[in-house]
Image 1 (cartoon, rainbow, N blue to C red):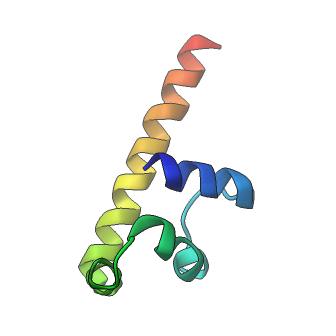
Image 2: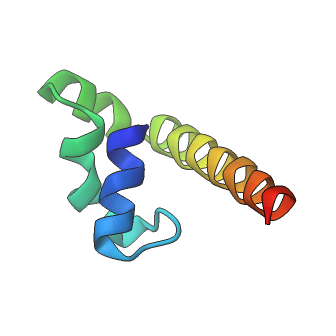
Length: 66
């Protein structure tokens, strides 16, 4: 997830969009079999949900500390 966060920061993106999938896939899955599993609808949607959840948690913590 840290690699994903860094990639999003470098890309200037605040969330994972379907357009970023092919760019981010090698960051998220190091092997071809892992990539194939993530390309399945449920795998990708689950990953996006988890990433957004972590993003929201981080943003909420930042608002508390600000």
